[in-house]
Each structure stands twice: as C-alpha cells, then as structure tokens.
Length: 406
Image (cartoon, rainbow, N blue to C red):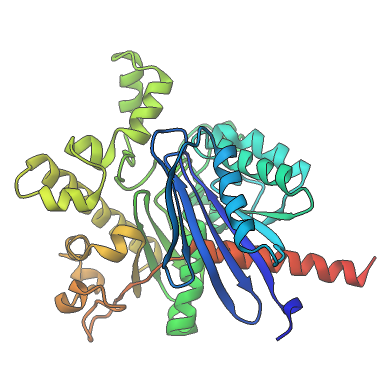
C-alpha cells in the first residue's frame, strides 16, 4: 500500500486544565500510532506523558506550563521530534458545543472561529480553551488543515419535544434548548455496535450509559439520538463527579436571592463542587468512594445517590424508546466498576435486564444472562478515533472536490 493512501491525522481534545492528543494512520485500515496528554495546565506539577501504539510509555516528565498555548507547543514540538520525516495531514479537534448551527464536522475557517466565539456563553468552561487551541495550531502550522468535531452534533436530530424546555418561546428562539453532549462517544459506540452485533442490534432500542467524570445516558433508535440526560449544558442530568446533575430551578433562585451566592460562585458550585465530591465531602473519584464507603457514611451516600439517579434515568429513557433491547455501559466508571453496574441494574428486571454476576465481575463484553431479553454490554468508547474518522473523511471529500474542479 503506497503512502498516499494514508492520511496522518492528529486529534486534540482540550479540557479546562488538560490537553490530550492522539496520532492516527487513517486509510484502508485505522492505526493508532501514539497518544499523549498534558494535565494540570496552569497549576504546579504539570505532567507530560506520551505512549506508543502498544500503550508503552515513551516519555513522562514534570513541566512548568502556565497556559494552554505553552502546553500545546510542548506537545507539538515533542510530536515533531518523533515524526520528523513524516507529514502531518490534518488536525481534528473535539469541540464541546456547536450550538444550533453546527450539526456535523466543519473545516476550520475564520467564519467558524467567529461563530465559536459567539457560542462561548453556552460553554464558558470549555470553548475558550478549545478555540485557543485551534488558534495556537494555526500560528504554529498555518498551512495545516483543521477540522472541528462537535460533541453536540449527534443529538441535533432529537425530536423537537426532546429538545424543548417549558420556558417562554422566545428563549427557545435564542437557543435555550436541550443540546446533549458526549455525542462523539455515542456515535462511535453506535457504529461499533453495528460492527460487533450486526444491523438488527444497531437499529434496535439502545441506551448508552456513558459513566465517567462527566456522566450521561442517551436513548438511541435506528442509530439516532432520541433523548439524552444532559441538556443546555453538561451539568444537567445524572449526578457526576463534581457536577450536580438536574436541579429544581427554585434551588438556584433560592441560592441567588436568599443565600446571596454570586452567579460565578453558583456556576463553580454546580460544576466543580457538587456531585460525588459535594455529597461525600471526600472525593470526586468513584474508586476512592467505593474503597471508603464501608467506613465513611457520606461516601456510601454519594455512591448510592449516583446509582439511584442512574436507575431513574435509565427507566425514563427506556420509556421514550417503548422498551429496551440493548444497554451499553462505557467510559471510566461504566467500563471498570462492576459494583456500580450491578447496583444500577438491580431491580430493573421489568425492563428485561438480568445480569450475570460472574461476567459482570470480570467486565466481560456481554454481562447479561444468556436468556436476558435485554443484552447488556460493556464497550470501550473511543472519541479520538471518531474525531480522526470525521477529519479524514472531510479532508478526503475536499480533496476529491478540488480534483474534480468547478
């Protein structure tokens, strides 16, 4: 196979204090070449870690990185040193929010960047860093193609009723709707379910439980999002590591008016001081809480609240589908915490869910009993590969258009 049949795609996922990247060979086959991350950006003890295709650590060291621009340059400089004789064809970025307008991946243009900056009020904790990352790549490699992949795009085809809040209509016209997130994860898993289990399973009634630091559930039918737990922001829905999940709006009004909490402090509370951390007063990490729940009552309460809320949302999403054929657990907690899966699924036999404890304990690909009407799967998600696929498809499409001419 000649080199021109492959594109080398770099994916970048920029968070509030971290940047993750992965390098793929995309062609007739898809090959991960290396992956890496920098965390604690702007804090003491920033770390750079890079791994090869087999997961072997290539480098790991502590750095001083005051901002995202410095961190990104460090990552890209390291990358260039290691692919010195190889071209880089494009960079794909995960963008947490695409608003109403962006329903599929787009090449980065000045117009797109201007639109993203207008969307910052919808995702102030994510979009500013993501936009700065795109701009930093432009400055370092001005000729390199860039593609924006939106985490909200998968949900933009949800039924109108699933997108609506019971608010005055003019707010909906201004974009105050339920957007949903973790779309790249859902899209990857929907395709992977088709590959592993065939078209009948992929077209059936599916709930995807993406349970990580951020947690959401999504109802999928015929490969499309029907409803999802996150809403206008990623703070809605399930209880999460540090996010509250759904709240009675009156709670927010009370905190603003009676407790004198400033809007910025309220945002900090809802997104970074609530959830497992706020309830337990110990940790935002599920593993820590499971280790401590026998000795620490607040830790046990936090875990139980997480599972209780997840159980409620699972049943609600099954109702939107008219039943349930497949339940998929994914992300850090979903893939690696058997006791959480067991607690969420306990008592859900009326939905056809019957777990096999021995399969569940070892994180088997299928953890339901042989005769369970609902097949329960544990699947590894791969947002980076989904970004690489979208980026590769888009640059190939543009290349074909250029060859064909006007």
